[in-house]
Length: 332
Image (cartoon, rainbow, N blue to C red; front, side, top):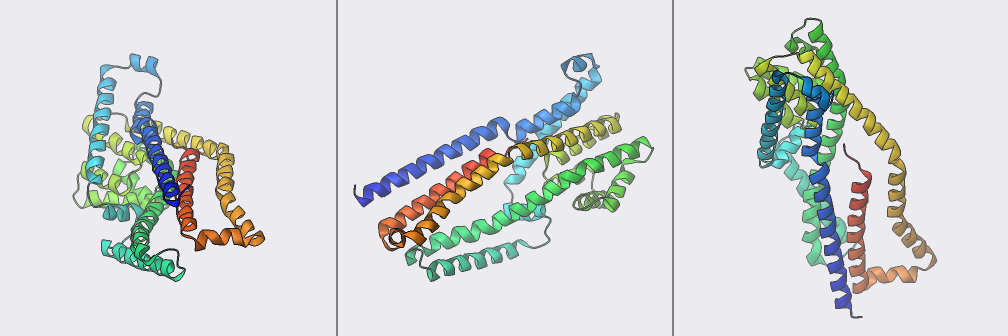
């Protein structure tokens, strides 16, 4: 077969694989995505006793449930609008970093220049393809780093958030006002819970309404747990009710989620190990061939067809690593 035909087939196969992966991920998010999980958690908080218990509740509880669902939809619409804003600034805010956006741009330029220097120094390809490597690396690498810091911060917040809710619940039951309970959390809870509650209480002290302070808190920490907490406080401020009982139910749900996450992590460790081994096999075999028969491996770096096959193999490896990561990463 001719080289152009092999290249065309390789590119077509890569595009088909990428399209199939995108469709699979989209279908998964549509069925098990954040909106579906949020609705299930709202149902668990509002209706912890099941459908039979819900049938026995009075009309006030049904009205409160409708208000919570309406508030959840309103909060989702607000989050969708906020996604249209400047994404880099929002990612910096979620990561808890105190730096201007221009610093991120400067870091992106430096990373792109370093990537271009490495590409030219080691002669990975023709010079005209240098911008095709430097620009994506300089753009995506700092953005990925911000996302990684934000996700790690959100995990720490979620890990300690149930304890903070318990503090509020016990404080309300003992007669303390809700604002004083939040100030206690801001003083004594670990990071980043104490920082978020301190910003929340300071915002209210400076004149922000409860709705505005909660909206800013969910922008800084867009976790489903904090969104539920914001909904509960808003509904309670509008209609009243037993806030301690509702927060107690929320705390139970959060602790149940944590226990389920630990169980999933334990049971999926074998699949993750298998995925890591499968991903490392091509590189190990390539290193062995380079030691045993280097004349076979050199062709991949000296011939044009070999360079093309390396690029296609790298793309396929990236798609495979993404698919295996999506399969082994189970979300609740």
